[in-house]
Length: 101
Image (cartoon, rainbow, N blue to C red):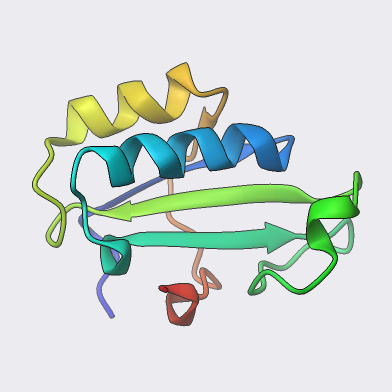
């Protein structure tokens, strides 16, 4: 899948990532447009797993497929930052797009 029209940010805590996801969902953005991934200390991104919400060593990535969302790039980036995210300059190749709900 082409990732040229995605925006993404990393979050240090799940609650901040959840804030971004909630905001997008409150704007009637389809769940299929939102990708959520966990990043363990060893590196690579993976699908969230049971118990991840209790782990303090994970970073979180929230990505938005702008082709599937009725929202502009600038507004999406501002939202990710406002909710505590650090914008990624490049979308990771290992972003698990299968994590779409």
